[in-house]
Length: 255
Image (cartoon, rainbow, N blue to C red):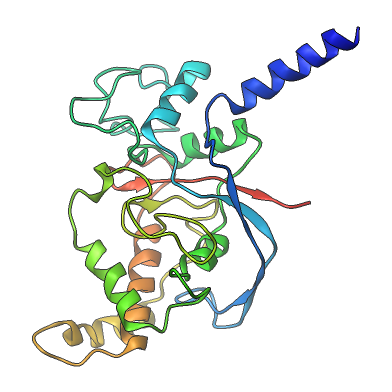
């Protein structure tokens, strides 16, 4: 009887871990931070949580499709994914030529990303959790005031085709997490919870000339503009959108 129970447990465990990241998750020690372009400027509390060290890859998603066929391109309903879903696949399970197995999975809707994480006993990170981890560079938990860090982020926003690079191509940050910036944008659980006000748009547009010619750009200008770009992008998409430059990673609460 005991051996049968062990076998059953092993089968269940394998079914939960047959895809997903073998390198594990990073433990993020919570705290407070002041979000930029959020609903207000008050500090937000973030609890301790785990987050994937890398974005979910094409190879991992292929395995997910094998075990969850209703999310294959030929089966998924339009309510959950638009016509661009799995556009870099030749069919339900094969990538197009030139697509890397170890590159971040993109062309995936919020619904599909959410389901992927749930099948692993995880969830998508909240917007605040993502921003909290995304503040970090290699050495500091909050590097948003550093010119070089903000210039790196903004230069990536202008770079085409960064999505078809292998995960881990960017730096390992303070928490041991890779590719928060530099490869793809990423879904969050509550991606559309923050709306950019007209006043915020005006404020950013009013300083946009700082990025022209040889104008001097301060840390706060770069930091605010980088954050504005992320929040504006999130506010422009819908849950069934599948975008070539938009991927995801999973998170997990600590009970």
